[in-house]
Length: 331
Image (cartoon, rainbow, N blue to C red; front, side, top):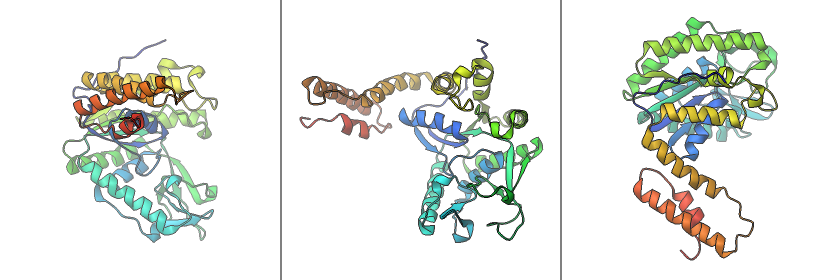
């Protein structure tokens, strides 16, 4: 196995930091792991986003706390949708769709005020824009983040030039640093292969992201690179580490990447605490065969005391759910 040196952050992430994560589906692998380990995170307030224009546009919308109205939504396949949001925000009721979207915008705006880190995972250089036509819902030429299974003729697909990727992200970063002077950014490129674009175009797409990301890292002192793409493609580089679709990295691959992320991006004291919390998470997920036995009650009691001790020692970590889970009627 070929290995690569992953540069450690000079001022790494620690518990107590607020972390906003945005971008492709690989973002959620990192975010879910950090969330399970009780880091303070906010994931994908617009849902999964793939291209740089969508990512930078969404971040600027959080800065401005942009609120959506009826004119920003369209009805398709019996659902109200937003071109700037993942389909998880779609709803059969227009007002409920708006409520969910605007609540997420508000939360992202408030979180960004005190965020210490933003982790951005870019997935593709391909962008989709609405084409002119009487059946199109939205302004012709508008960049969309999600196509919501609309007809292909509604969109024009193009491969973003490196210059445009850099320009959109550069302007976004400048606004972020002006809004929150304490922000640090980690950029990464998703190792998920976009085979629907074709192998050649997928590689062209990833190459443009990598070139753009390194340009930005070299330009801004507060922007850093984590090589998730290289760890999967060049270090693991074997289909054993992909799911059955041969596109998405499997559990072993994501765990490998997460271990490298922790060792290079998270401070030593926090990594030690992560191990303690991981034991609690494993215990909580344990499925007892005989839950009424004294042995299981003792198991609950033991872990309740461990969680209580951790909560007392690290008051900035919210372990309320774990305390309630391990609490027995006798406590």
